Length: 153
Image (cartoon, rainbow, N blue to C red; front, side, top):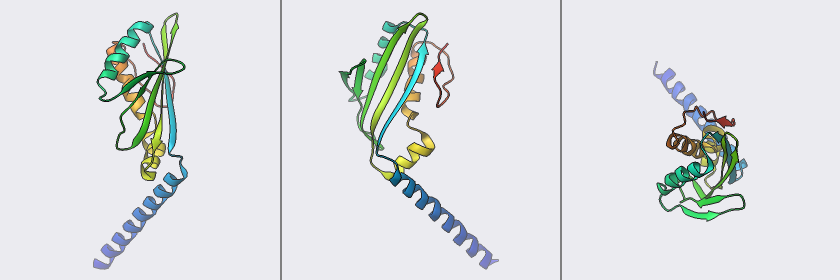
């Protein structure tokens, strides 16, 4: 019985080692630079969306505001995982509200973190969370589905 327990511990340890080595190898193959974008449609007008957007951005400490080619930009403070993060926003008026596009670009230097964000969490993680907050601030109910363009009711 004791031999079986030792063999099981060795097998589990080897499996964990293989998974860790594969994660490291995959992370080394992923570029440290990334860009993620999400487009949504809000039924609110452009001015109201800008107002809510600015209110939400004020809650992010040390976010620097600027203007890019297509609209406002924010340089976000470095996090444990991502560095040199920039959010660029484009808001286009439509007949039924406005189309809102948020693009995040940045760098992830830790190879294991690159693996986690690329294959497990996804680069849209922070964008999805922020868009959910903006939608709630506008009083619009929605279900955010990862990887798809989402229309807000």
